[in-house]
Length: 254
Image (cartoon, rainbow, N blue to C red):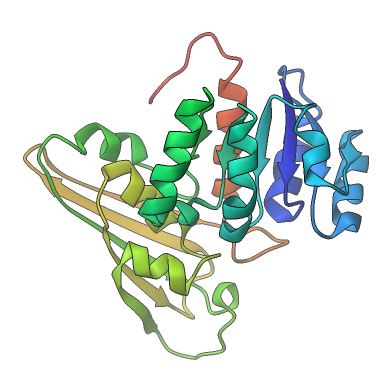
């Protein structure tokens, strides 16, 4: 499988450098970034090709991996899906716009393409998906991040946001993909609280789900990427796991 990447920042670097040495049937071959130097640098590490024009790689790959930003999903997803190509989207917040979500879903169906949304920086998504239509009554997310990861300089804990996921992704489009991932998985606009906390050095996500099935809670404490503190390492690792699963005979979990 040949893969083309949109966005050649921290996540793309982790994915590429992890996947390239392995014989896993996944060939990350083409790289696109509006900063061509970043694309060229990553392409050189992978023995791939950097393209100036995004459309130049669409006829040469089987799948597009987006590692840029929600605005890039809006710009490039229609062109990918119209080609009948599958797409892995890291900037899941783009799909909290339900009009856009439905438009991309219809486009993918029309052209026999699939959109893959990795689990990202959280655990427990399989459980949420399993109970989404079977008596799920309440889902809450509390996220704690360090001031550095949010570009803040404060000395005490502060609640930055308390509301719905659809609003959270607008205020923090590069920081709270987790809220979008959970909302899409359980098909509801979940309640989200975002706290900046000088006492934490990791991105902490606490999920509580309640319903007829009972109750479960998960806590994920992620170290941020060294190259980009806004991003959790686990987000990149989830994409690597997804890519590898495409060529596996036996897949565990949903």
